[in-house]
Image (cartoon, rainbow, N blue to C red; front, side, top):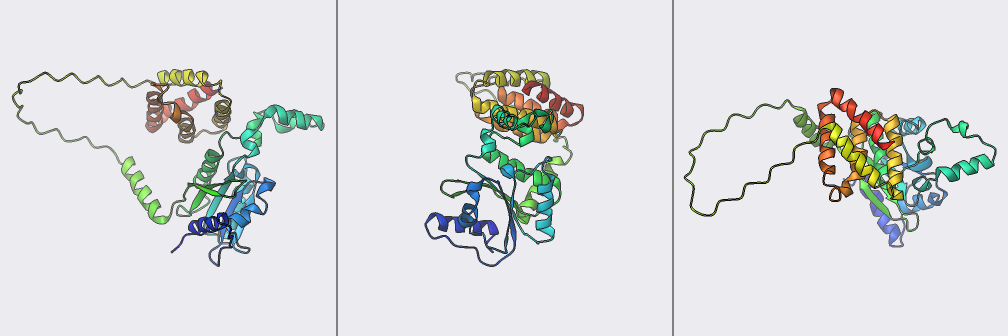
Length: 315
């Protein structure tokens, strides 16, 4: 049976070929998109959204997180009152929240007589929901919906990005279907099972050395970093790359997330996503990330220590 995602992508290909068409009858589904006016008319046509079947929700930055509880409420209404079968979180290129400037926004609201205190005392980027990467933002929204627990574990939640110029859809992350959920659950169960010590190896006779040149000794493996050493390596990396404006924006997003998010796993994922392209430039970086990951897997005090260290080094 063709999934709703495949229907939407097929309709988008028809649109790009110059023959737009509307999806036929079928199960209802939800589309969460941004409030950007460029999407009005484009989104429906480019995706073939049918009236009476597609529930279109719109909020600034197509975000779902702890700051946007009403979006979760709308998703729950769509799932349980309108019986929607899938959710699409659709970001778009050239989003205003991805090029957010605190200075410009402050100037605009102050020129209209609005005080800074009206937005609280936290970072404005966090209040407005600014982010550094359109695709990463869509994935974060999808994962927040899944973590929220308001939808069944087998409810497909997809991440896509639409090009505001051409209307082309990009599939970023495909939602899990029941078979994949079962496989993922089995893998997670296997990973969480207690580790049993391996049986001792069976002694084997040592073969006589063969004549010939002696093999070179293998290079010693690098010693694992402590969490404190990892924090120092991460601080050096972050300080060295702050000259890049785009990197500064991503780092600012991480700083905001570190202030409000206590989940070490989501914080680590955000950090790793920022750092992954710099592994070759900073040889200690992969070891630093590995030390952080180890601390999180150990849970307990080490996991909380990682959260606190991350907050400090991104300030």
